Length: 182
Ligand SMILES: Cc1cc2nc3c(=O)[nH]c(=O)nc-3n(C[C@H](O)[C@H](O)[C@H](O)COP(=O)(O)O)c2cc1C
Picture 1 (cartoon, rainbow, N blue to C red):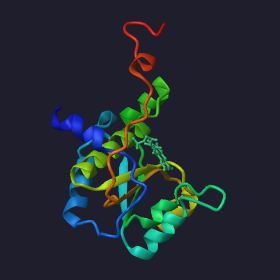
Picture 2: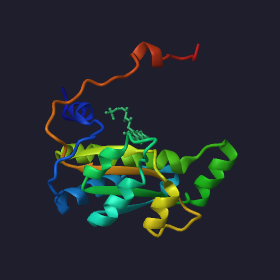
Picture 3: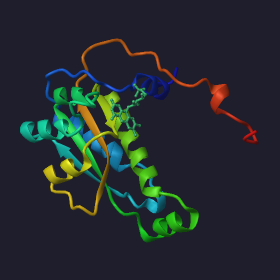
Picture 4: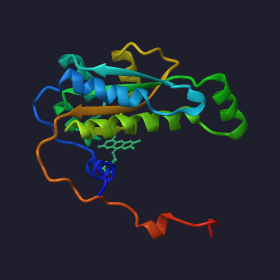
């Protein structure tokens, strides 16, 4: 199997973290991988806020779960959280949004997020992409202006050493068509 296929199989959502700090150089390589991601009109519509100050990190983690919806409680264990601020695309991509009824900046941050996560896997780190969080709270904690969006938060840290889980995915014949949808 090629190294890339192995990497894709190894990447999984990490929901148990060790208490080990993440080396700056590893974090920087993950951020560099995200920085190099492609984007519509090369807009690069993102700002990455690394939250590594422990008390602030805990506050951000607490904004990803509540008593009623507690599935993101594991984020308290992660030493780092990254909030991705979705910036405006370049005017050409914005025109594309309008004319083609698309949201290219969301597509772009999705790609950058996966670049980040795959590099983290290569570094022996674990990530979990989070879409469920109190956006208003996190924006306030991180001084993000009200008119901006945070669509993705990523937890990052060393995973507890467990075997890679089998991927639960739809079978290929359910998701693939050749030449026609029907
Ligand atoms: C946009 C997006 C939002 C997600 N939000 C959460 C989340 O809030 N909490 C969580 O535990 N996992 C979240 N996940 C992780 C998915 O549940 C996970 O990727 C999926 O179940 C496949 O499992 P795997 O990542 O281990 O391969 C999110 C993933 C994506 C792409």
